[in-house]
Length: 270
Image (cartoon, rainbow, N blue to C red):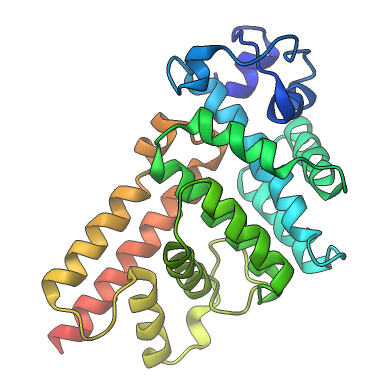
């Protein structure tokens, strides 16, 4: 049974105050905000996996809505991308309704971004790979219209900083996500559309996906590949708190990283 079923069935019990607790409570329809987060949870200890998954789900779609509204207008592309992500997660009707509600809550002027990020970081603790996956999903949504404007960039930088990532790391992730989207922004999430590109363009994107320049040695390319595969390993991410509904996205990401590595290897043999 997934975190969703466990929460709805009352099989998971916890108390969490603050804005993230309110969001989770609104998602599952239970009042779980009657007292502050327990000290053990504040220190990142004793947080069950289901709670982490619920927090990831709630923070993902609410902050996605907040970033989409950053420039004052939520574009059709941004709405379409959010729905594509929901479809790709194979959310059922009830889960999709909850995700849309969270997205809309994030668009509100009184959305407490700082509070949600603070609590999400506490729950996720030091699970860097999980936090990076969260940030990558936000970047996919932000790049839905093919660009990240100044107001969106400010929020993304704040999200990254609060989660412990440097500006340089954000730049690397934007390059990674942009190469994945092929700069078109409107492609299906972790989508296709490469059949019309030239071999040189595809090879350029392969290097960008691996995060290394063409001047890298074979050993450096291999090291980058192994690091990315470790960061996006589906089983590891789920064990750290990635909602099970998102495992398909992580699986496809590892397939794309592997394909990029094979392309680079083949080009070097020639």
